[in-house]
Image: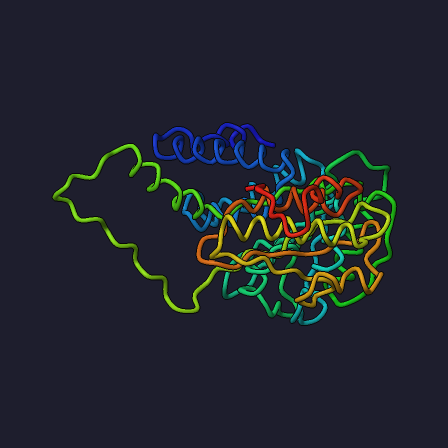
Length: 329
């Protein structure tokens, strides 16, 4: 590098606007670094930040590279799509069982910009699909706990195979006992709870008319992303089914406007007993759930209880007489 080029490398920081821009970017990158270190998928974190305008699209690539490629040592590969991709169901189903790995796709559409895609979050995929042939896509794969050499590289190859509709065999190191991944809760839940606190702290004047809540638009319920719960018991048997029933009943008692939807192998399960009757749901197999309603809340706590209910510790939820509804939430 010549002296003239080297001397101009920091020209951006010579002016206040450039310095402040760089400082905000560094602070944002540091925050996202904490998210990745805590087990969150960087695509989820960046999509939330873009939606709330905390960052701009031009910041995405530098953040992804410095954190995933440089700091956390993710394996990565870029290629021009070999064929048109119209579905990610196959990818989502398999990656949901990789409890020790995070997978991030960065898809660049010549007309629509950058799409950050987590195989376990359907909404960004629905916006991006179909992925056009010959467009650039990069996949990053990283481990949440120590793995032997070659594991994340193998997962990277498998991720591309799955993207194209192929298959991937189960490999050691892809999954661990207990899901190490973290998922962001819907931020709307906090906005809903705050007014109730304020109304308790500040008495309403007698002359003040209470504000009636605005009716929600008909049929406009939110649906969270499908969240994987891996079975850690030897088999998802009748005891696990009863534990899940009680957990879901407790959740719906606390939040009567919300519903818990169960999914298995891409199909909606209307009767949880079917999971036991089939006898197919064994150790390490993911069952998916999502919550529908105007303002889904306590998503992480629900996931924690469902994980326990799918483990050997399911009996903790079976105390009390039949028909007893637990107060878990």
